[in-house]
Image 1: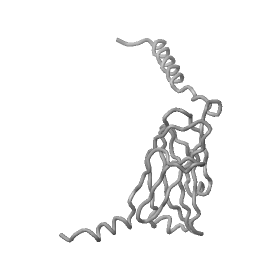
Image 2: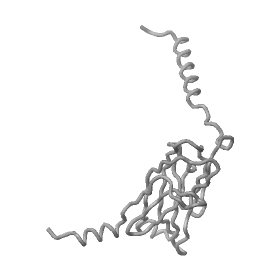
Image 3: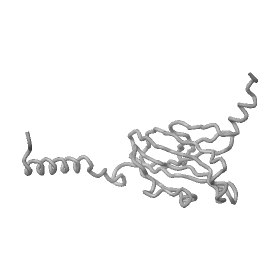
Image 4: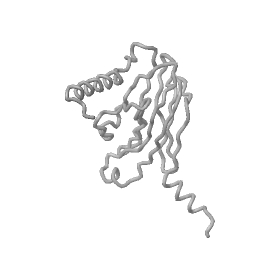
Length: 171
């Protein structure tokens, strides 16, 4: 059975309208009870900056469309999160180097994972962590109390792997 051309057009229009309804804009969080969540960074020395940042909130990317981490180093983004409801935050910690050769070949000492927590209205949260050759970690904490919310993500580094291999019994 073949559909007439007008019927196909009508079905395409109905499908397009249904798709528009599914993509309705999210409510403006600034008008609802909310908390803030910000990234942080540490200037380790003249060549290295450790960054702790948010990648996604509830599956929605919060990075600029053209993510260029080196241009964002030292610029901590702040995001709004709905208060009183569980939120799923994709976070990362990494070491960034000003020296191009180091950036290309040095260990970035990176930690990445998901932290889930329930933000309180009016609270300020920050992504924090530690970056080292042995282990890199990232977590979210309350900015005033420094209490960690959710879980801490820790990833062994190359130095830890080398130390484990050196201490393993010979076979």
